[in-house]
Length: 258
Image 1 (cartoon, one colour):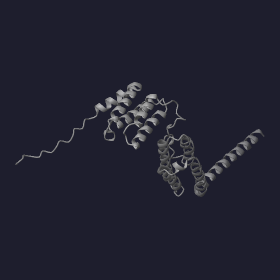
Image 2 (image 1 turned 90 degrees about the vertical axis):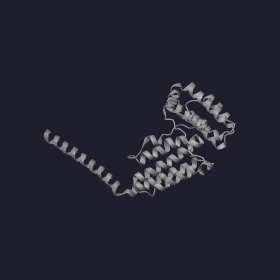
Image 3 (image 1 turned 90 degrees about the horizontal axis):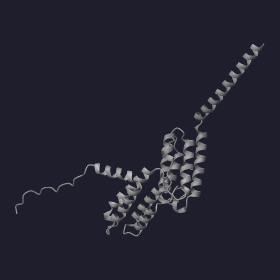
């Protein structure tokens, strides 16, 4: 009697397992055979995302080429059937919004980039999703874990009062501020970015007839040397190890017959 009861339980359990397997197979097969359902869900959530972006971004930022290009790329994904192509365009649009954040430093964009867009991409492109592509460093004072160094503020003020063209003043100021906003525990990266900006300023003699490029870059180099001494020495050694490019000699005009 007990043996029969045990056998019935085994059979019942076996039937339940089969039913579960069949149900899962049905849903998976139905999803593949009916991509319209997935497409409808994708398009609906994409539209909601775009509406949210339009609501949060200011009128000025929505007129920027980066924003317009990003929205066009996002919308284009709804017409693509290939998942890899969809992901490619969505990732490209995200890069444009990351660039806009880097240029403007608007604090609300940090959450949109690192949460809203990242969550959407992870949900709809699970096989292609690259987490590192949707993690963007802090570029504003609200998310920064430390204040801007006073030496950098002083350098920026000197830069603003220099004879550099306005477009370069804005560019170098944003580069310095963005570096300062990044996590303080990534010292090597911050040192490298400061050093790259210093080198760029030092080589901008044609943009500063007064010679401000030398004064400003020297102060920035001094800041790096004092705050990131090991990185500074490493960067200097790397420069010295590079082969020197000799200037092209003037062609020999040949003998003169005058």
